[in-house]
Image 1: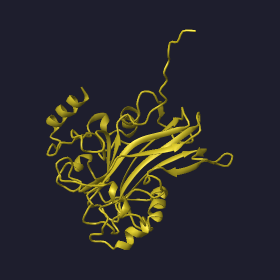
Image 2 (image 1 turned 45 degrees about the vertical axis):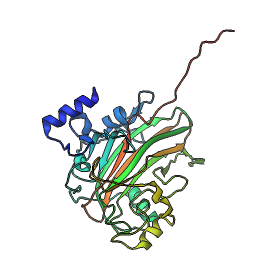
Image 3 (image 1 turned 90 degrees about the horizontal axis):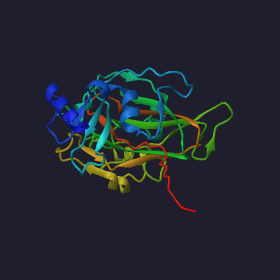
Image 4 (image 1 turned 120 degrees about the vertical axis):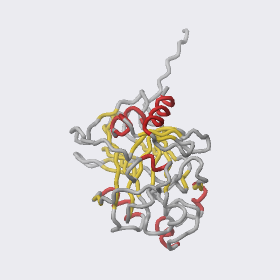
Length: 296
């Protein structure tokens, strides 16, 4: 039914259908909290539209997010939320290469990721964010996603190192306990087995294009080996020039603990050639409880 609704809405509103992927930012599909609670999170986990301090969040509707369906089994994520550092989420299937509004943001969390990547001081542009809280129902949380960009393959190892992060906040994360009355924050959007953030300069084809190889080596000394996670796009699914494999963002947490997560994405240095994050539908789950009927 959802597939039919999206298709009919696209026909009615003229959203881009040049590729097999479809994207809609109509109605609830442009509301960040609604998208998190109804698309990213499945019915086994309750989420809340409030921050770590339990105060209500104000998240305005934006066409920088949308509901997508890949309609092609070769794409890493089949359906869910797409976040785009451009004016419209549909830019991932349009011929515009995703130009943003060139609005500059100040964000300490994304700035910390840029510092880790060796890109400290570069402007953060066209940021989009989804934030929500939840009570952990097990000792781990996880969800699936992939990253893609128009910066591939022409601007690898350059200063246009578009940035994103999934910032989990709570009193206990991955074996670290916060001081009394404090919380800790951890970016869980990293290359598997490392603490290296995923970005254009950390996962790509394994060679520089218009940039300096030193920029990629600074961001990720193993960027050549990690090119195994990269997929070049032929334009049939998305107009993004490349995208990563599907990854799982995960963390060890305290069962019963209150957690807030902020999903953020932005252009870096300019507003051209945007990047995108695809969040897999229903991949953030609560525990699966099985009741068996056994005879004594």
